[in-house]
Length: 308
Image (cartoon, rainbow, N blue to C red):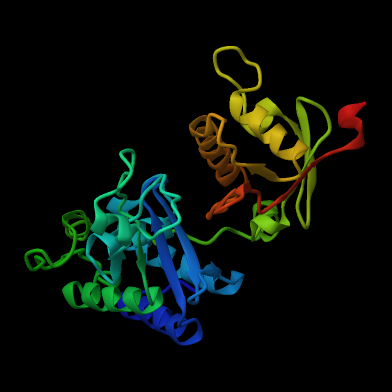
């Protein structure tokens, strides 16, 4: 993708995305501090091309805001800005642990809300391409010549028009927009990136080693190499033990009334964290299914050698 020289050109790319992918939206999971791109009323995973276009265009937009370049992915930073500025962001209050049969609203009216219920700040940015385009329009009107100015002179922003950190970053000479990855071995790895959890297959070869297969690669790792080492004992942590149990149970851990379910939930959170980092994927790899328990979206099992 060529490097746009202004907010107007970046806005045009977002507008094209709005035409091509009008049902794309971004979901914010406050507890995990995680953004996920979804589509349609059924909240299905977004297709790879719409995700690629949004992430690449957001990267270019964030490239004009050098003060905001942190350890987060560029598209997360961009969505954070939209959320903070309330650009199409709508809160969806939820209960973290509520799994009752009736709706939350009914229990709120009756006052019979479980004592351990905790409201979150989850929400959606609907029409995320359109909202992004309008935000670019505002940025362009604030600093119309920011990318092309050789002096780096930026007019003072109107009060409360955009986050303070953005306005401050525009008062300094502009750094180049981060370049796309060169077509080297790194780019080759990027082309092999996993696009969905359904592509992943985990097979336990032994108590301490797994085979990790995707549509294009296969590798083996032990618990430490995968990220499941207990830092104190250097042995497998409890999340690894839970992952192994998930494999032995063919990908589903059913909820039992007499079990310590809170401990299972904690282990699942730890597994999600490791998997998202390892595979560079968003979304929930092991969602909770009402009336069943935790069910893996990826394939997981034990090899014949596991029991030998």
